[in-house]
Amino acid sequence: MVPDDGSRAGDGGSAGGGAAEDGVVLLDEVRATIGRYVVLPSEEALTAVTLWVAASHIQPALQHAPRLAVVGPTKGCGKSRVLDVLHETVHQPMMTVNTSPAVVFRVIGKNPPTLLVDEADTIFGPKAGEKEDLRGLLNAGHQRNRPAWRISGPEHKPTAFPTFAMAALAGIGDLPDTIMDRAVVLRMQKRRPGERITPFRSRYSVPELNALRERLTAWLTPLRGTAAALVPAMPVEDRAADTWEPLVIVADLAGGHWPANARAACLAMTRHEAVQDEQTTLKTRLLRDIRRVFEQEGDKEALRSQDLLAALLTDAESPWPDYGSKGLNAYHLSALLRDFGIRPANYRFEQGRQAKAYARNQFLDAWARYCPDLTTAPAQPASSGGHEFMPARPAPGKPPTPPAGSLPIGLPGATSPKHAR
Image 1 (spheres, one colour):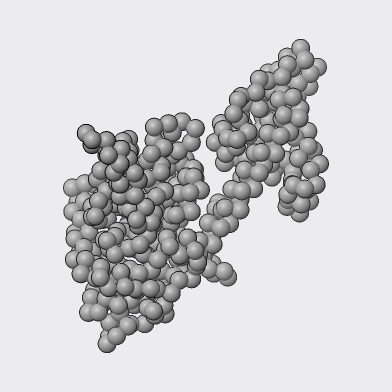
Image 2 (image 1 turned 60 degrees about the horizontal axis):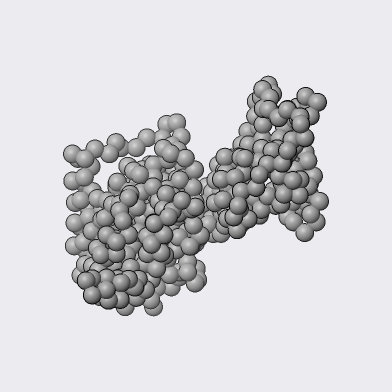
């Protein structure tokens, strides 16, 4: 068992022997360099990315290939820039946006590349189509010895294609649960005013990052046998332990402050994702319940906010009567739906009356993505009863301020870490 308190194993060295001190210095340099090019959500996230990059250089020694999910709510959050930096530092990078699954199947072998997938959100969802094979590959490739069988060659023989490879996926919005559950998750945000980064310029950025890659290769390649034998103490269990173990192994090989920092990052980021999962589950429940309300109302074109809330609150078995301090209200409803791009607006109903309302067609995309079992056939809007239905001018005044940013990532009782620069 490798010590988890940052102490050195053996005579003055960690599991990596004499390279331990070099490992500490090198990981520190990699971390500082990555932090100059991208603004990551937390100090723990910067530590995790550093260790993920290093872990790619010991892939042959690993039993699990953790995914790195680089997600953000909109464009311009730095997701692609993270992939740029990874491309110049990880082991044998393979960048892909629209590569066919057949190509990826054939490039993964005994010495697999590190897959870097941009615009990963286009691979999943109702319009994925022919890309479902790539999705299956990404799921299977998290664990060694999970080949994909295909009919191949002129004789059409069943052939096993390896799938095991580390992969970083960048996209807008959360990726499917099957991917997120196997990933170290970076929830990117747009930079705040005053947050500055070093511009990424190929003529000087690429040589600098490639030099770090060469040093990582030189340090870690001789340690692959040692890494394969390590059974590190983990602060988490089950699949989270499978995903984070390669990162902790690298930290233990380095020694110094890295073992403690790696486990702190693991604990903080997995706890944060547990909270995110609870929120995601709650939001999906809300979409389903709203779908039910629209069906009960004959799939009207729009429902007044107050009527929708009243219908949700009548279900005593739902979480809505107990949501917040006094039950779900209009502000809560708007905040929960905001991530889906759904917002209330002023609508004109019968007899020219105006009211805040939610239009049914705003929910169609979210229902298709998150409640596909409820949307096998799009329902036709019910007749409006002869009255004119048209959007009214927005009411004057300032919309409510959205809730503060994402939950802080950190150990319980710790202050929220500053953004890495």
